[in-house]
Amino acid sequence: MTTQQLIEQIKKKKSFLCVGLDVDLNKIPEFLLKEEDPIFSFNKAIIDATHHLAVAYKPNIAFFEAYGIKGWQSLKKTIDYINDKYPEVFTIADAKRGDIGNTSKMYAKAFFEDLGFDSVTIAPYMGKDSVEPFLSFADKHTILLALTSNEGAFDFQTKKIDGTELYKHVLETSKSYENAQNLMYVVGATKAEYLKEIRQIVPESFLLVPGVGAQGGSLEDVCKYGMTKDCGLLVNSSRGIIYASNKADFAEVAGQKAQELQRQMESFLENL
Amino acid sequence: MTTQQLIEQIKKKKSFLCVGLDVDLNKIPEFLLKEEDPIFSFNKAIIDATHHLAVAYKPNIAFFEAYGIKGWQSLKKTIDYINDKYPEVFTIADAKRGDIGNTSKMYAKAFFEDLGFDSVTIAPYMGKDSVEPFLSFADKHTILLALTSNEGAFDFQTKKIDGTELYKHVLETSKSYENAQNLMYVVGATKAEYLKEIRQIVPESFLLVPGVGAQGGSLEDVCKYGMTKDCGLLVNSSRGIIYASNKADFAEVAGQKAQELQRQMESFLENL
Image (cartoon, rainbow over all chains, first blue to last red; front, side, top):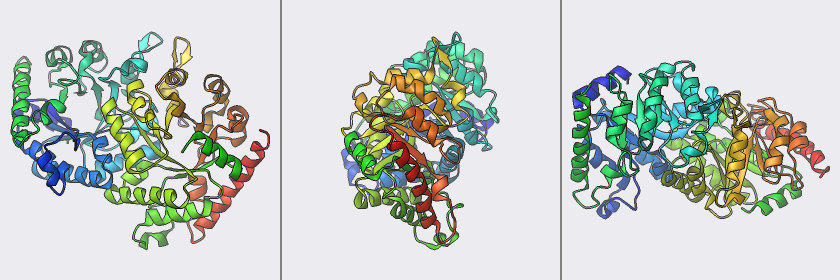
């Protein structure tokens, strides 16, 4: 998917909501456990209930890998379902990968070719040659970790190198990577006040913003400091939507929660 | 597996060789492609030919994920085969994972519980709460990226924060993590001269050292600067062993290459 197609979808749906699919068998409605593939059944219901309100889905790969081969099958069915039924929706493999060049190339094949995701999240620690193999895929997007939503972000990411924080070096350096136009960045909503300075380094790039809701980030602050003329934001909510109810009405309630967020987002988009 | 069991194996086999299983269908002998599971068949032959010379196997997870569900099945069969037939061998999931706490916990379940690996490689960018969920597993090991073997290591890892390189901050900081006794570290053989300073920070920890062979690192330098009284090294070779021949004799030649390395290692172990 091109960035332009993503922007058009945002304008059409008046939303920049990304729904995170972090499916834990201990948290989904118990009656689903009787299904042949409870994870896929859960995802399908959530997707059907939210696809008109969300512009992106973000399966969290760990939550599939934890269930081994069965989990990988559920992941494949989930991404195939989205690509077949809702091809306009942007898909993010939240995988946090990154390795030496020939290995990153294999991860890129896994997520872009075998699974057919539009994008994948990548950790920057190993530098340029660990990121560029992902960037070489046309119309695919590499979402580089810049400043994450967790407490551990302060361990290294905000430490200063020559007076400038590491995450800013990541942002600045990555702009010189080959096919840097395919880059997006992860910036946690819990650190919305940092967005002002981040926008000075990457004024146009799309930012994937986790941490609204369960982790305590504010949508208003994210929009205030992070929004561009083309929106430039994908704000993720996982637990606040998918686990809003664990009863028979879970998909319906997820739809309601997604709609609440979409309405808030619509009001911020009006300011554009 | 406990660290003590690993040390005993090193002494018994007079080897600290780790064989990397980076299986690319384009590089394995063509006749194997007719097999039902060519990746597993290849791995099984390599493992049978090298298990008495190697103390560890390191499947590179990307090379399995690139083949989707089939690849994950090959991975499961490979690790099950090692655990069943050669349970004394240390196993490393080279996965370079790391995410917020509840997600890292799921990755830990995937590699330690579902697949049954002894250890997993982890990227440190997201800090303490992304690493500790892996460390909480008893007798499992978390191998944190410190200084990697690739060119991109110089992008961020060697940059100085308050006069000290980032990778040294990673080493130093990680020592305060809960269950830090379960930590090992990745240090590339291509940067062997850095090992002297690394040993001042982590004098006893095991180091997983990739980059000998195809990537150009020197075994002698690695031993000179990195070896401890209990060896403290796992030196990985992947392509130099597994792709030494792509004919019918591939496993036999892999065994010969592994033996060459084991003999060199034996000579360095004599100096202990």
